[in-house]
Amino acid sequence: MTIRLYDLTLPGDRRMSPFCWRIKFALAHKGLDFDAVPVGFTDIPKLHDGEFKTVPILETGDIIMNESWAIAEYLDRTYTDRPAIFSSAAERATVRFFDAWYGLEIMNRLFMIYVRDIHDAAREEDKAYFRASREKRLGGQTLESFTADRTAKLPEVRHALRPLRATLANQPFVGGETPNYADFIALGGFIWVRAVATLPLFEEDDPIYAYVERGLDLFDGLARRNPGNALAA
Amino acid sequence: MTIRLYDLTLPGDRRMSPFCWRIKFALAHKGLDFDAVPVGFTDIPKLHDGEFKTVPILETGDIIMNESWAIAEYLDRTYTDRPAIFSSAAERATVRFFDAWYGLEIMNRLFMIYVRDIHDAAREEDKAYFRASREKRLGGQTLESFTADRTAKLPEVRHALRPLRATLANQPFVGGETPNYADFIALGGFIWVRAVATLPLFEEDDPIYAYVERGLDLFDGLARRNPGNALAA
Image (cartoon, rainbow over all chains, first blue to last red):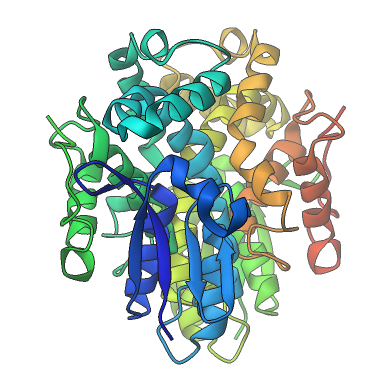
């Protein structure tokens, strides 16, 4: 059965959605072939009569669905002869905590630092939509004024990453010797930054930078092939 | 084989060590009987010729060991016919992340709010040791001056708990429908606070307070039988 994934892109075929990356890693982990179809921000409402507001959107056979967490569970439920994304209900539940932590403590801060970079890297036809929707989320501030002091926000996100850094002192991945879905969540966020960043996120000797490098090598360099900028300086 | 656990106590038989609670929950989860032997802070160096500086210390047959994480792994390795503490290597590795988060973001903040309460609740013969060792850790400040503005620190720890709160909006335990070792870590910290707190940690409608109540009911009220103060106001 062909699997098609609608995958957010920027000019230069930079695939940037952190949520699409989770699913591309999950599909690769299960050894499933897929076709990642590039779409821009303003293409999403044109798909399936606007049923979905966000990517990833997965199509396979009669199934059309979105929401990365639901897709990951669907893949495990459906392809039971493939390696499991979640080895147990307890692992899946604990990864849910990781997802909450990464969203609240890390993704929110990355958004505040890189939101203008995303805008500047977007397709011309997507810029007005992106600016309007994000400036609304920022309480009406312009992207430019909101990110004017963004360099000063780097220490805070690096500090917030301490629990991940401490974990990686003892094991190469959050999942242990091999990555699990928590890693796909974390790496997805860093690959999102890498696709657009004009300000390096990490100091060069940060163990999390080495971790992202390991992540870029996973599945024969699946994410390394994606165009990106320097993540460390 | 008899299992003996040296278990830190305060007057009134208040068992307070968060790390001992992890192991008492883990032993109960595996359905293993154990004898929790009360010791005060200054008793620990008198055990086993001072080999261990911290509890829990587990004795069973020829085995004498400490460090809660090592004990949990030992229990799974040894009692393979009992319910597993960790269902898989990936779950165990992901719980390690939870442990790092809880230690860095939550336990450190709880310590700063409740360190004087622990001192005041300690056995008379333990107070001088406790004060000297903790004031050293606080850079020489007295416990009294360090905690003088502690009420102002409550919003910060409640804020830091957002990822746990968000997780509990979707599932009763970090482990999912039933608790796992991540819950034993989190609950251990809250039971530590409960044993000594003269300032309630939670607002009454905080879902984390309800979670702690569920935790107190686990294993026929194992932790609820431990004397404690109000955790919510």
